[in-house]
View (cartoon, rainbow, N blue to C red):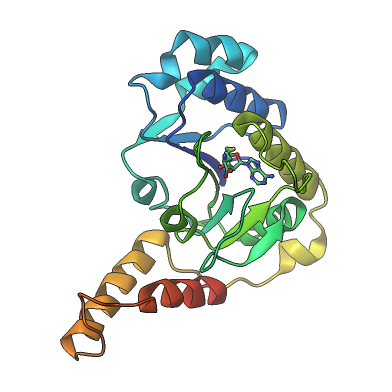
Amino acid sequence: ASLPFVFVLVEPSHPGNIGSAARALKTMGFARLRVVAPALLGALAHPDAVAFASGAVDVLEHGQVFDSLEAALADVSLAVGLSARTREFAPPLVDAAQACALARDEVAGRAGARVAFVFGTERIGLTIEQAQRCHRLAQIDAEPAYSSLNLAQAVQIVAYELRRALGRIGTTALDAEHPDYASHADIEQFFAHFREACIAVEFIDPEHPKKLFERMRRLFARTRL
Ligand code: SAH
């Protein structure tokens, strides 16, 4: 049941956090860790990663490394970005429990569905471009004056919420009819085509696109293509 859920760490700096994230996943019954361009080569096998993973070294060993967030999300149908902060043009905001309920409903009764939870770097979190690759932005409720959790602790809370959400799969979720949503790669091709078309008909000046493409990304992320 854990297979359609992947946890993506974008450019983590500390191998210890990768190991801790692996442990967080395994304790909650998940196993799929993806790492995008870690700061250190071989980060998944780094002694700190192995030490912090403790009994979850198998999750590290099966971890996948990607060059780009793009590539890490290519086979994903629903991407949820985790962020302590919100920004203009960011995808719609949900809390952690809502995000996990969405994730559960996404995969219920749909063999090809895959959900990614995307976590930002320790230092700056998700960039606006990375957030815009996600369909929803999820916030873990925290104290406004200091709401930035440690990366692996944020992973732990999401994995825990997801475990709770999956424990509550009811007949409604299982019976729900789902359309086939477009994959991330399909949607990126759509945006590229849309951009070309806007330039070809001189709707926009490629030198000064203003905020059109950000707005379109936001619009289409809301509708679920
Ligand atoms: N300094 C960064 C936070 C980095 S914490 C910032 O201010 O944005 C590392 C990652 O953990 C974040 O990118 C996010 O994915 C996750 N995270 C930490 N606290 C969170 C919170 N309150 N809600 C959602 N995600 C959080």
